[in-house]
Length: 265
Image (cartoon, rainbow, N blue to C red; front, side, top):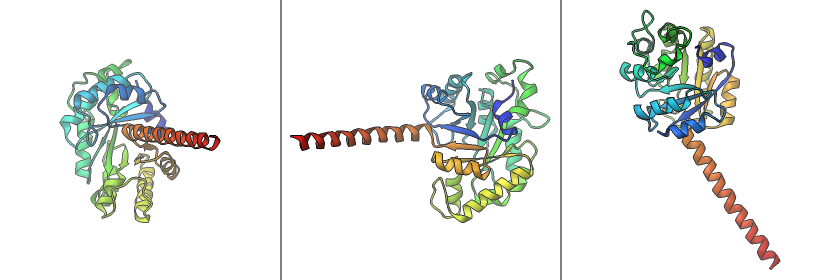
């Protein structure tokens, strides 16, 4: 079984990625039925632990979106465990230089390309036509997050590490590292220049770039810029925005109805 997300990225398509903060398999199941190309389980800033991540992977299995995971840190234990559980790719925070990128590759890929330990307890289900170990290296996305000044300075060296699939930009941490507010959907010229550099660097190496976005409109802008994986908000953000809209719309309609009744009284 090939990773369908990688197949789409190779064709140059833009993939819309969802983000799972809530540690609940039912939330993952609902999100899986709403059209995402991939869904990322967040073990860094999300509320997931390993058990809830596995339950979410089970909920996503066979439902369409390709399951990815953002790990808490560049540490081989959790990276190997979440890949063994069935994640098809790793987004790893705070990868700042080529040495750290090499460590990430080692944790994600089997020998001889890496040093991942063998034991794909759930991921083994993907080996339908040939053993999983024989297809994993070509099908696991390895995405270091570019979110510090040091990472930007070492961008090309990070991308030159064999086994790295591309770069995933973390705008809020990047802004914070540059003395700016930690927000998404940035418009500062110096940040946009970094985005252009990332796009140019991945295109020169036939790799891919992803980015975290707060809104659909900004995600579309980033897709037009050249990012191929565009994340839109999070499960919690989307639920909160929909709930807020429902409450405010209901109150507005009630107020309009009351005003109309008063006018005709």
